[in-house]
Image 1 (cartoon, rainbow, N blue to C red):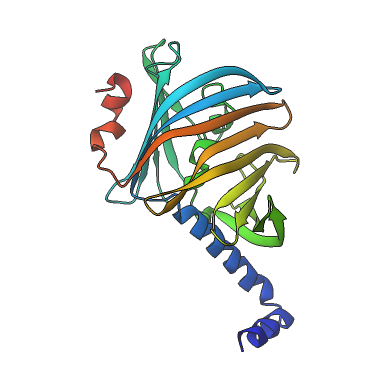
Image 2: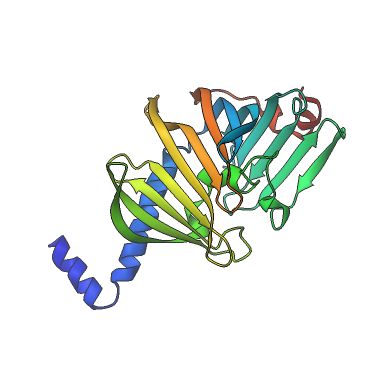
Length: 257
């Protein structure tokens, strides 16, 4: 009966709408895997050029939702010495608007990041932009999703889903996502510029079950045009822990206390 209904909808011109809704549900499930109330990680970020390591950063990241559903993220740099003490704070509402600020110890002051233009800047010399940092927490309602096809990637059956931002000022014209059908995990992402040319490639691997949440312990983001990449290795991670609200304040951003 369900198959018959689907055929009727397709013939009547409504099949595309049903397909789009299914695509959004798939993406929502993949995002839900990474969207818990709180998470704390320590990661190593390896910056490479043409396969050669240029720099290694060690960061602590804390993310938590407040009582109103605002996503709060603090990133604190531990290594190397010239980056130690740098802190980045992002307060993101469900509608996608975000307050992003970074404390630079060498300047001794806080700099505000304007998401409309500066959000596409490199985050601390990595291949991640300020917008990329929050990609996995991006609300599905901000994009229009379409299932393009199903195909195999690394021996795993995946949905290939296109996400087109509703905000035309967003850093990318579209994103493609390879989501494994069985586990609802994101394995690969492609990000396209305003001319529909591939700008960045994201690859997620080494998934492990942490408290029932499938977590990628290795994420590689490559900038195609300049042949650089940043590989993020999670060294430790905790879900559902109590993170003090003070970590997400202007005072903590400036003082670390």
